[in-house]
Image 1 (tube, rainbow, N blue to C red):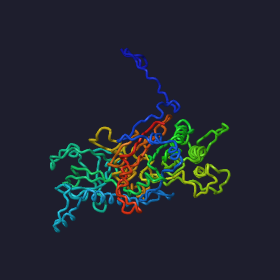
Image 2 (cartoon, rainbow, N blue to C red):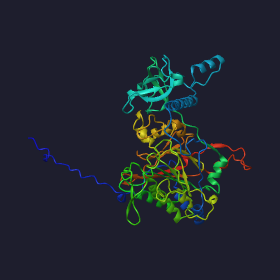
Image 3 (cartoon, helix red, strand yellow):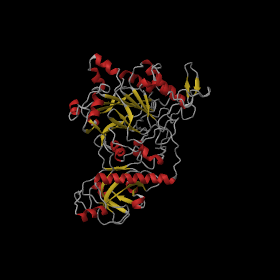
Image 4 (cartoon, rainbow, N blue to C red):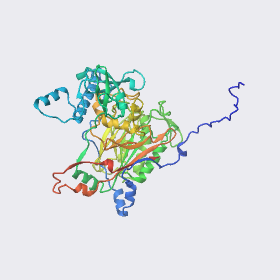
Length: 577
């Protein structure tokens, strides 16, 4: 018997109740730890300070223990620039230069030789180190023996996600005339190969723009049967002299043996249903209580995707209850700068420093990568009263003055540090890499992988940034990410960072990659109409005995250099706001 589509069936009907929109005030588990990285069971910085005597607690609270600076090897933009005027030949040259530099780095790291170098060694009777790898050969050159090619991963399909059938390896113009070959990954995935019966299955993770070395047989010149894969090489690791580490970690003007506390907050900072910035207010209240050494804030500060901002005329309610339309800059000045100003006004002696990193989703900034630092209108510049406080005024200079108006400028330590996107910082002895662009999501949307261990995909994607020596190795870029290829060197990763902060809408995590780098995705501070997550990173000092061993007391001459070892002395907690 047929039934009317709207009638009830003989089976019990399950009526799904309408989905309730969770509001920020209704959130639960505020302050709960979502995930942690703490391989050595280290205590939090708050627990260490709580165990100190009262006079020591007061000294720590009144002491400035962090020195923030640009990494000396970094080439990130330091000021605004004329963007998106790069001609086609310069863009092509930038891609070729990156492929050439990465190819040289891979060959140097794995001691890969070409036929000429092997011939010279043979003629001179020099027996080089046998690394068990094939000879370097240009992409597309037919060879019957095992060879090794270095090139860029491309997607042969004009549309759609990269897959095993569409993967191509593109060689350089200089050595391979830009030739492309197909990669047959069957032997790589299964471990079955005609030339190597003992080969084990290998995992891989490919995305467009990735520069890799592939070993295999290319007998036709069109398809390579891959047997081994090298997914890049990490940049140089940071080393410092023991005297420097001793001064940063135990100097009376620095940490003085206490942990370095860093908090990472990532936008959006207000929920989708209003412009009150309640999550950020709660975060600042918590910061004013905990008093960390450094707070890293990544945009968007004024999210261009916010429903109340996307229309172009954000509306706020003033103190008298009247609604008024305001500019994006005014919104930043009142909701971001105004909040920090109020915090320092209540506690002028507070030593916490803030690092502000812009985002391509900020409504008042140019959406170009790399992004220069935030620029405030200098104090004292006169503008028409009709637009005073509305445009080009971010209110950052008021933060520096609050509570210390009578203090000479040279005696006022800097409270707010405006950095570029991306940026590489040094906070005391810790090197931190940051990009506010959601590169993890962009790569994840166009990545092809096989044989990855369960639960390792996000860490593997983050590992690509280090192996590719780039904060944005994806090419072509994802929709909405405008790359200025003429400045490609400015988003390169100069050194392997101790901590890599990569905010993403994907699941938050903190994991170690490439031996010494701890990758942290703090998550977004807000999720739609409710609260999100943020990260707390406590870096403990090394033991004093290790640092003092080998350091000469007279002028610290002849210091030994050593790695910072942050991966073994950091605790990362990702918490709910």
